[in-house]
Amino acid sequence: MQRFGILRKAEYLQGKKLHGCLRRCYSGLPQTAEEPAPAVPRMPPFDYSPPAYTGPSVDDIYKKRKEFLSPSMFYFYKKPLNIVHGKMQYLYDETGRRYLDSFGGIATVSCGHCHPEIVQAIVNQTNSLQHSTILYFNPAIAEFGEALASKLPGDLKVVFFTNSGTEANELAIMMARLYTGSHDIISLRNSYHGNAAATMGATAQCNWKFNVIQNGVHHALNPDPYRGVFGSDGKMYAKDVQDLIQFSTCGKVAAFISEAIQGVGGIVDLAPGYLPAVYKSIKEAGGVCIADEVQAGFGRTGSHFWGFQGQGVVPDIVTMAKGIGNGVPLGAVVTTPEIAEVLTRRSYFNTFGGNPVCTAAGHAVLRVIEKEKLQENAHVVGSYLKDRLTALKDKHEIIGDVRGRGLMLGVELVTDREQKTPAKAEILHLMDQIKGICNNFTLLYEWFAKLITFRATN
Image (cartoon, rainbow, N blue to C red; front, top):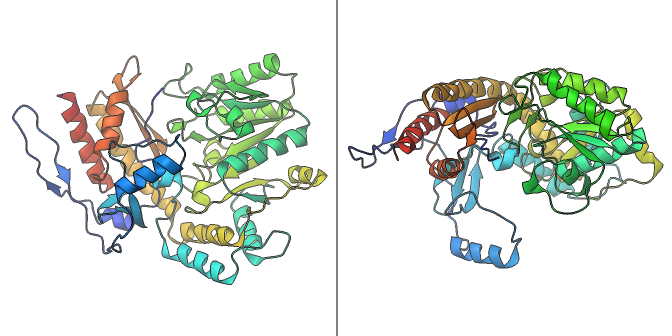
Protein backbone atom coordinates (compact mmCIF):
# COMPACT_ATOMS: atom_id res chain seq x y z
CA MET A 1 0.00 0.00 0.00
CA GLN A 2 1.71 3.16 -1.24
CA ARG A 3 0.91 6.40 0.54
CA PHE A 4 2.31 9.88 0.30
CA GLY A 5 2.16 12.32 3.20
CA ILE A 6 2.39 15.54 1.21
CA LEU A 7 3.58 18.53 3.23
CA ARG A 8 4.19 16.28 6.20
CA LYS A 9 5.36 18.27 9.17
CA ALA A 10 6.25 21.62 7.64
CA GLU A 11 5.47 22.89 11.09
CA TYR A 12 8.25 25.37 11.31
CA LEU A 13 6.75 27.67 8.65
CA GLN A 14 5.91 30.81 10.55
CA GLY A 15 2.59 32.50 9.97
CA LYS A 16 4.10 35.94 9.43
CA LYS A 17 6.25 34.57 6.61
CA LEU A 18 3.36 32.66 5.07
CA HIS A 19 0.83 35.47 5.14
CA GLY A 20 3.30 37.79 3.46
CA CYS A 21 3.45 35.45 0.45
CA LEU A 22 -0.19 34.74 -0.31
CA ARG A 23 -0.15 36.47 -3.68
CA ARG A 24 0.07 34.54 -6.92
CA CYS A 25 3.32 35.00 -8.79
CA TYR A 26 3.63 32.59 -11.70
CA SER A 27 6.03 32.57 -14.59
CA GLY A 28 4.84 30.94 -17.78
CA LEU A 29 5.86 27.66 -19.39
CA PRO A 30 5.47 26.82 -23.08
CA GLN A 31 1.99 25.41 -23.71
CA THR A 32 0.22 23.65 -26.52
CA ALA A 33 -3.47 23.73 -27.34
CA GLU A 34 -3.74 20.04 -26.49
CA GLU A 35 -1.61 19.91 -23.33
CA PRO A 36 -1.63 23.08 -21.22
CA ALA A 37 1.37 22.73 -18.92
CA PRO A 38 1.12 24.09 -15.39
CA ALA A 39 2.97 27.33 -14.74
CA VAL A 40 5.97 27.29 -12.44
CA PRO A 41 5.56 29.64 -9.48
CA ARG A 42 8.47 31.88 -8.55
CA MET A 43 10.00 31.82 -5.09
CA PRO A 44 8.88 34.65 -2.79
CA PRO A 45 11.44 37.16 -1.52
CA PHE A 46 13.63 36.03 1.37
CA ASP A 47 16.22 38.33 2.86
CA TYR A 48 19.08 35.86 3.07
CA SER A 49 21.89 34.61 0.84
CA PRO A 50 23.74 31.38 1.66
CA PRO A 51 27.54 31.29 1.60
CA ALA A 52 29.17 30.12 -1.61
CA TYR A 53 29.58 26.35 -1.81
CA THR A 54 33.14 25.10 -2.31
CA GLY A 55 32.70 21.39 -1.62
CA PRO A 56 32.75 18.33 -3.90
CA SER A 57 30.41 18.01 -6.87
CA VAL A 58 27.18 16.04 -6.83
CA ASP A 59 28.80 13.33 -8.94
CA ASP A 60 31.70 13.02 -6.49
CA ILE A 61 29.31 12.76 -3.55
CA TYR A 62 27.27 10.12 -5.34
CA LYS A 63 30.39 8.03 -6.01
CA LYS A 64 31.49 8.26 -2.38
CA ARG A 65 28.04 7.35 -1.08
CA LYS A 66 27.91 4.38 -3.41
CA GLU A 67 31.37 3.14 -2.40
CA PHE A 68 31.52 3.93 1.31
CA LEU A 69 27.98 4.24 2.67
CA SER A 70 25.06 1.87 3.18
CA PRO A 71 23.74 0.31 -0.05
CA SER A 72 20.24 0.31 1.45
CA MET A 73 19.84 4.08 1.10
CA PHE A 74 17.21 5.24 -1.36
CA TYR A 75 16.40 8.50 -3.11
CA PHE A 76 13.08 10.30 -3.57
CA TYR A 77 13.92 11.98 -6.85
CA LYS A 78 15.20 11.07 -10.29
CA LYS A 79 18.02 13.55 -9.74
CA PRO A 80 19.02 13.48 -6.05
CA LEU A 81 19.29 16.77 -4.20
CA ASN A 82 22.61 17.91 -2.76
CA ILE A 83 21.53 20.02 0.22
CA VAL A 84 24.40 22.10 1.61
CA HIS A 85 22.73 24.87 3.59
CA GLY A 86 19.53 25.64 5.47
CA LYS A 87 17.83 28.73 6.88
CA MET A 88 14.49 28.53 8.67
CA GLN A 89 11.92 27.07 6.22
CA TYR A 90 14.34 26.95 3.31
CA LEU A 91 17.08 24.62 2.06
CA TYR A 92 19.77 25.41 -0.51
CA ASP A 93 21.61 23.19 -2.96
CA GLU A 94 25.21 23.60 -4.13
CA THR A 95 24.16 26.15 -6.77
CA GLY A 96 22.40 28.36 -4.22
CA ARG A 97 18.95 27.37 -5.44
CA ARG A 98 16.36 27.70 -2.69
CA TYR A 99 13.75 25.07 -1.79
CA LEU A 100 10.85 25.13 0.62
CA ASP A 101 11.44 22.24 3.00
CA SER A 102 7.99 20.79 3.59
CA PHE A 103 9.44 17.48 4.79
CA GLY A 104 11.33 18.91 7.76
CA GLY A 105 14.10 16.31 7.68
CA ILE A 106 11.47 13.57 8.18
CA ALA A 107 9.43 15.52 10.73
CA THR A 108 12.50 16.58 12.67
CA VAL A 109 13.19 20.27 12.04
CA SER A 110 10.45 21.64 14.26
CA CYS A 111 11.54 25.28 14.58
CA GLY A 112 13.34 25.96 11.31
CA HIS A 113 16.80 25.20 9.96
CA CYS A 114 19.61 26.88 11.89
CA HIS A 115 17.19 28.75 14.12
CA PRO A 116 19.43 31.41 15.71
CA GLU A 117 18.32 30.81 19.31
CA ILE A 118 18.80 27.05 19.07
CA VAL A 119 22.15 27.41 17.31
CA GLN A 120 23.31 29.84 19.97
CA ALA A 121 22.29 27.45 22.76
CA ILE A 122 24.30 24.67 21.09
CA VAL A 123 27.35 26.92 20.58
CA ASN A 124 27.26 28.23 24.13
CA GLN A 125 27.06 24.74 25.61
CA THR A 126 29.74 23.38 23.29
CA ASN A 127 32.07 26.19 24.28
CA SER A 128 31.40 25.45 27.93
CA LEU A 129 31.24 21.64 28.07
CA GLN A 130 30.60 19.34 25.13
CA HIS A 131 30.38 16.02 26.95
CA SER A 132 30.83 14.53 30.37
CA THR A 133 28.57 11.76 31.68
CA ILE A 134 25.30 11.59 33.56
CA LEU A 135 27.35 10.22 36.48
CA TYR A 136 28.34 13.85 37.10
CA PHE A 137 25.95 16.72 37.73
CA ASN A 138 25.31 19.21 34.94
CA PRO A 139 22.59 21.88 34.80
CA ALA A 140 21.65 21.32 31.13
CA ILE A 141 20.11 17.87 31.56
CA ALA A 142 18.39 18.71 34.86
CA GLU A 143 16.81 21.92 33.58
CA PHE A 144 15.63 20.35 30.35
CA GLY A 145 14.23 17.33 32.20
CA GLU A 146 12.18 19.63 34.41
CA ALA A 147 10.95 21.70 31.46
CA LEU A 148 10.02 18.62 29.44
CA ALA A 149 8.16 16.97 32.32
CA SER A 150 6.12 20.17 32.78
CA LYS A 151 4.63 19.67 29.30
CA LEU A 152 3.13 16.27 30.19
CA PRO A 153 -0.09 15.49 32.09
CA GLY A 154 -0.66 13.51 35.27
CA ASP A 155 2.22 11.75 36.96
CA LEU A 156 4.38 11.59 33.81
CA LYS A 157 7.45 13.29 35.20
CA VAL A 158 10.47 10.96 35.12
CA VAL A 159 12.60 11.45 31.99
CA PHE A 160 15.12 9.09 30.40
CA PHE A 161 17.07 10.65 27.54
CA THR A 162 18.09 8.63 24.48
CA ASN A 163 19.59 9.39 21.07
CA SER A 164 16.69 8.47 18.78
CA GLY A 165 13.08 7.38 18.55
CA THR A 166 14.04 3.75 18.03
CA GLU A 167 16.09 3.85 21.24
CA ALA A 168 13.23 5.49 23.11
CA ASN A 169 10.70 2.89 21.98
CA GLU A 170 13.08 0.03 22.75
CA LEU A 171 13.51 1.34 26.29
CA ALA A 172 9.77 1.87 26.72
CA ILE A 173 8.96 -1.69 25.66
CA MET A 174 11.62 -3.12 27.97
CA MET A 175 10.32 -1.07 30.90
CA ALA A 176 6.75 -2.22 30.20
CA ARG A 177 7.81 -5.86 30.23
CA LEU A 178 9.79 -5.43 33.43
CA TYR A 179 7.03 -3.53 35.20
CA THR A 180 4.19 -5.90 34.30
CA GLY A 181 6.09 -9.18 34.34
CA SER A 182 4.42 -9.98 31.00
CA HIS A 183 6.00 -10.25 27.57
CA ASP A 184 3.24 -9.74 24.99
CA ILE A 185 3.08 -6.40 23.19
CA ILE A 186 0.14 -5.25 21.06
CA SER A 187 0.71 -2.73 18.29
CA LEU A 188 -1.20 -1.72 15.17
CA ARG A 189 -0.96 -2.93 11.62
CA ASN A 190 0.57 -0.26 9.38
CA SER A 191 2.57 1.08 12.35
CA TYR A 192 6.24 2.05 12.49
CA HIS A 193 8.15 2.22 15.79
CA GLY A 194 11.81 1.69 14.86
CA ASN A 195 14.33 -0.70 13.35
CA ALA A 196 15.94 -2.49 16.30
CA ALA A 197 14.90 -5.80 17.88
CA ALA A 198 11.70 -5.05 19.81
CA THR A 199 10.71 -2.05 17.73
CA MET A 200 10.99 -3.94 14.45
CA GLY A 201 8.67 -6.50 15.96
CA ALA A 202 6.20 -3.78 16.91
CA THR A 203 6.44 -2.30 13.40
CA ALA A 204 3.85 -3.72 11.02
CA GLN A 205 4.93 -2.79 7.51
CA CYS A 206 6.87 -5.40 5.53
CA ASN A 207 9.09 -2.77 3.88
CA TRP A 208 10.69 -2.06 7.26
CA LYS A 209 10.98 -5.61 8.62
CA PHE A 210 13.88 -7.98 8.07
CA ASN A 211 13.66 -11.76 8.29
CA VAL A 212 14.97 -12.01 11.84
CA ILE A 213 13.33 -13.31 15.01
CA GLN A 214 10.64 -10.92 16.26
CA ASN A 215 8.53 -12.49 18.96
CA GLY A 216 5.96 -11.52 21.52
CA VAL A 217 4.16 -8.93 19.39
CA HIS A 218 0.57 -9.04 18.12
CA HIS A 219 -0.72 -6.61 15.49
CA ALA A 220 -4.29 -5.35 15.80
CA LEU A 221 -6.57 -4.08 13.06
CA ASN A 222 -5.60 -0.57 12.07
CA PRO A 223 -8.35 1.95 12.97
CA ASP A 224 -7.99 3.66 9.60
CA PRO A 225 -11.07 5.81 8.84
CA TYR A 226 -10.30 5.77 5.10
CA ARG A 227 -9.33 2.16 4.40
CA GLY A 228 -10.44 0.34 7.53
CA VAL A 229 -13.33 -2.13 7.61
CA PHE A 230 -15.24 -0.14 10.26
CA GLY A 231 -14.72 3.33 8.83
CA SER A 232 -14.54 5.90 11.64
CA ASP A 233 -16.02 3.67 14.36
CA GLY A 234 -13.12 3.52 16.81
CA LYS A 235 -14.91 1.29 19.31
CA MET A 236 -15.45 -1.45 16.71
CA TYR A 237 -11.72 -1.55 15.90
CA ALA A 238 -10.97 -1.65 19.63
CA LYS A 239 -12.82 -4.99 19.92
CA ASP A 240 -10.01 -6.59 17.91
CA VAL A 241 -7.56 -5.71 20.68
CA GLN A 242 -9.82 -7.43 23.18
CA ASP A 243 -9.93 -10.49 20.89
CA LEU A 244 -6.14 -10.55 20.64
CA ILE A 245 -5.85 -10.51 24.42
CA GLN A 246 -8.37 -13.34 24.72
CA PHE A 247 -7.19 -15.60 21.91
CA SER A 248 -3.49 -14.78 21.33
CA THR A 249 -2.14 -14.25 24.85
CA CYS A 250 -2.46 -15.80 28.30
CA GLY A 251 -4.89 -13.03 29.16
CA LYS A 252 -2.17 -10.72 30.42
CA VAL A 253 -0.11 -8.29 28.32
CA ALA A 254 2.86 -6.02 28.87
CA ALA A 255 1.82 -3.05 26.74
CA PHE A 256 -0.05 -1.50 23.88
CA ILE A 257 2.01 0.90 21.76
CA SER A 258 0.70 3.24 19.08
CA GLU A 259 1.00 6.64 17.48
CA ALA A 260 -2.05 8.89 17.62
CA ILE A 261 -1.41 9.75 13.97
CA GLN A 262 0.64 7.19 12.05
CA GLY A 263 3.51 9.00 10.35
CA VAL A 264 5.42 6.52 8.20
CA GLY A 265 2.12 4.70 7.64
CA GLY A 266 0.72 7.63 5.65
CA ILE A 267 -0.60 10.22 8.14
CA VAL A 268 -3.42 8.00 9.39
CA ASP A 269 -5.37 9.74 12.17
CA LEU A 270 -6.78 6.94 14.33
CA ALA A 271 -10.57 6.61 14.36
CA PRO A 272 -12.28 8.71 17.07
CA GLY A 273 -12.88 6.90 20.34
CA TYR A 274 -10.32 4.20 19.59
CA LEU A 275 -7.63 4.88 22.18
CA PRO A 276 -9.96 5.29 25.20
CA ALA A 277 -11.54 1.89 24.47
CA VAL A 278 -8.21 0.17 23.86
CA TYR A 279 -6.55 1.69 26.92
CA LYS A 280 -9.39 0.31 29.04
CA SER A 281 -8.89 -3.22 27.66
CA ILE A 282 -5.12 -3.04 28.13
CA LYS A 283 -5.45 -1.87 31.74
CA GLU A 284 -7.85 -4.73 32.49
CA ALA A 285 -5.25 -7.15 31.09
CA GLY A 286 -2.59 -5.76 33.40
CA GLY A 287 -0.71 -3.87 30.70
CA VAL A 288 0.54 -0.32 30.30
CA CYS A 289 -0.12 2.08 27.43
CA ILE A 290 2.75 3.58 25.43
CA ALA A 291 2.20 6.69 23.30
CA ASP A 292 4.73 7.01 20.48
CA GLU A 293 5.00 10.77 19.95
CA VAL A 294 8.13 10.68 17.81
CA GLN A 295 6.35 12.40 14.91
CA ALA A 296 3.10 13.82 16.32
CA GLY A 297 4.56 15.49 19.41
CA PHE A 298 5.71 19.03 20.17
CA GLY A 299 2.67 20.89 18.87
CA ARG A 300 2.75 19.53 15.36
CA THR A 301 -0.95 18.63 15.37
CA GLY A 302 -1.88 22.20 16.30
CA SER A 303 -4.82 21.46 18.56
CA HIS A 304 -2.63 19.83 21.23
CA PHE A 305 1.01 19.63 22.25
CA TRP A 306 0.88 15.81 22.15
CA GLY A 307 -0.98 13.68 19.64
CA PHE A 308 -2.54 11.40 22.27
CA GLN A 309 -4.34 14.40 23.81
CA GLY A 310 -6.53 14.53 20.72
CA GLN A 311 -8.09 11.21 21.81
CA GLY A 312 -8.54 12.31 25.42
CA VAL A 313 -6.25 9.70 27.00
CA VAL A 314 -3.27 9.75 29.34
CA PRO A 315 -0.68 7.03 28.64
CA ASP A 316 1.66 5.40 31.14
CA ILE A 317 4.76 5.95 29.03
CA VAL A 318 5.44 8.56 26.33
CA THR A 319 8.25 8.30 23.81
CA MET A 320 9.57 11.15 21.70
CA ALA A 321 12.40 12.17 19.35
CA LYS A 322 12.72 14.04 16.03
CA GLY A 323 11.11 17.46 16.76
CA ILE A 324 12.42 17.41 20.33
CA GLY A 325 15.85 18.58 19.17
CA ASN A 326 15.26 20.36 15.83
CA GLY A 327 17.84 18.10 14.20
CA VAL A 328 20.22 17.08 16.98
CA PRO A 329 20.26 13.35 17.92
CA LEU A 330 17.91 13.39 20.88
CA GLY A 331 15.06 11.23 22.13
CA ALA A 332 13.31 10.67 25.43
CA VAL A 333 11.06 8.37 27.42
CA VAL A 334 8.82 9.97 30.04
CA THR A 335 6.96 7.83 32.53
CA THR A 336 5.70 7.69 36.11
CA PRO A 337 8.00 7.29 39.14
CA GLU A 338 6.48 3.87 39.81
CA ILE A 339 7.29 2.49 36.36
CA ALA A 340 10.67 4.21 36.26
CA GLU A 341 11.67 2.35 39.40
CA VAL A 342 12.03 -0.93 37.45
CA LEU A 343 15.36 0.19 36.01
CA THR A 344 16.88 0.23 39.49
CA ARG A 345 16.82 -3.58 39.48
CA ARG A 346 20.02 -3.47 37.45
CA SER A 347 22.27 -0.70 36.12
CA TYR A 348 20.81 1.25 33.21
CA PHE A 349 23.16 3.64 31.46
CA ASN A 350 23.28 5.54 28.18
CA THR A 351 26.61 7.14 27.29
CA PHE A 352 25.27 9.89 25.06
CA GLY A 353 21.65 10.04 26.23
CA GLY A 354 21.17 13.42 27.89
CA ASN A 355 24.56 14.85 26.93
CA PRO A 356 24.88 18.59 27.64
CA VAL A 357 24.86 19.80 24.04
CA CYS A 358 21.75 17.89 22.98
CA THR A 359 19.79 18.73 26.12
CA ALA A 360 20.70 22.41 25.76
CA ALA A 361 19.34 22.25 22.21
CA GLY A 362 16.17 20.48 23.37
CA HIS A 363 15.52 23.08 26.05
CA ALA A 364 15.96 25.84 23.46
CA VAL A 365 13.43 24.10 21.21
CA LEU A 366 10.81 24.21 23.96
CA ARG A 367 11.47 27.92 24.47
CA VAL A 368 11.17 28.69 20.76
CA ILE A 369 7.93 26.70 20.36
CA GLU A 370 6.45 28.70 23.23
CA LYS A 371 7.90 32.09 22.28
CA GLU A 372 6.96 31.91 18.60
CA LYS A 373 3.62 30.18 19.22
CA LEU A 374 4.44 27.41 16.77
CA GLN A 375 1.68 25.14 18.04
CA GLU A 376 -0.88 27.86 17.38
CA ASN A 377 0.68 28.47 13.99
CA ALA A 378 0.41 24.78 13.15
CA HIS A 379 -3.30 24.92 13.93
CA VAL A 380 -4.02 28.10 11.99
CA VAL A 381 -1.89 27.41 8.91
CA GLY A 382 -2.61 23.69 8.94
CA SER A 383 -6.38 24.25 9.05
CA TYR A 384 -6.12 26.66 6.14
CA LEU A 385 -4.02 24.23 4.12
CA LYS A 386 -6.31 21.29 4.87
CA ASP A 387 -9.36 23.28 3.75
CA ARG A 388 -7.65 24.15 0.46
CA LEU A 389 -6.53 20.57 -0.13
CA THR A 390 -10.02 19.33 0.66
CA ALA A 391 -11.37 21.74 -1.94
CA LEU A 392 -9.02 20.13 -4.45
CA LYS A 393 -10.38 16.73 -3.49
CA ASP A 394 -13.86 17.89 -4.47
CA LYS A 395 -12.55 18.76 -7.93
CA HIS A 396 -10.16 15.92 -8.72
CA GLU A 397 -10.97 12.22 -8.63
CA ILE A 398 -7.33 11.27 -8.17
CA ILE A 399 -7.39 12.61 -4.60
CA GLY A 400 -8.89 9.86 -2.49
CA ASP A 401 -8.41 11.36 0.95
CA VAL A 402 -7.12 14.43 2.76
CA ARG A 403 -6.39 13.80 6.41
CA GLY A 404 -4.44 14.70 9.51
CA ARG A 405 -4.36 17.59 11.96
CA GLY A 406 -2.41 20.81 12.18
CA LEU A 407 0.68 20.57 10.02
CA MET A 408 0.75 16.78 10.10
CA LEU A 409 -1.27 16.34 6.92
CA GLY A 410 -1.53 13.71 4.23
CA VAL A 411 -3.01 13.51 0.75
CA GLU A 412 -3.69 10.03 -0.63
CA LEU A 413 -3.82 9.65 -4.41
CA VAL A 414 -5.85 6.86 -6.01
CA THR A 415 -6.63 5.82 -9.56
CA ASP A 416 -10.10 4.60 -8.56
CA ARG A 417 -12.03 6.20 -5.72
CA GLU A 418 -14.38 3.25 -5.24
CA GLN A 419 -11.63 0.64 -5.15
CA LYS A 420 -9.17 3.06 -3.51
CA THR A 421 -6.41 1.79 -5.79
CA PRO A 422 -3.11 3.52 -4.90
CA ALA A 423 -1.86 5.84 -7.66
CA LYS A 424 1.71 4.60 -7.45
CA ALA A 425 3.11 6.13 -10.65
CA GLU A 426 1.35 9.43 -10.08
CA ILE A 427 2.70 9.67 -6.53
CA LEU A 428 6.29 9.30 -7.70
CA HIS A 429 5.70 11.77 -10.52
CA LEU A 430 4.15 14.31 -8.16
CA MET A 431 7.00 14.04 -5.67
CA ASP A 432 9.51 14.71 -8.40
CA GLN A 433 7.53 17.57 -9.95
CA ILE A 434 6.95 19.58 -6.78
CA LYS A 435 10.63 19.40 -5.83
CA GLY A 436 11.83 22.97 -5.64
CA ILE A 437 8.79 24.39 -7.39
CA CYS A 438 6.24 24.93 -4.65
CA ASN A 439 7.37 27.81 -2.53
CA ASN A 440 4.51 28.45 -0.13
CA PHE A 441 1.25 26.87 0.87
CA THR A 442 -0.96 28.88 -1.48
CA LEU A 443 1.32 28.29 -4.43
CA LEU A 444 1.60 24.63 -3.56
CA TYR A 445 -2.18 24.42 -3.61
CA GLU A 446 -2.36 26.06 -7.03
CA TRP A 447 0.51 24.01 -8.43
CA PHE A 448 -0.99 20.80 -7.06
CA ALA A 449 -4.31 21.62 -8.74
CA LYS A 450 -2.66 22.44 -12.05
CA LEU A 451 -0.46 19.35 -11.92
CA ILE A 452 -3.42 17.05 -11.26
CA THR A 453 -5.32 18.62 -14.16
CA PHE A 454 -2.24 18.29 -16.36
CA ARG A 455 -1.74 14.62 -15.45
CA ALA A 456 -5.40 13.86 -16.14
CA THR A 457 -4.92 14.83 -19.80
CA ASN A 458 -1.78 12.73 -20.34
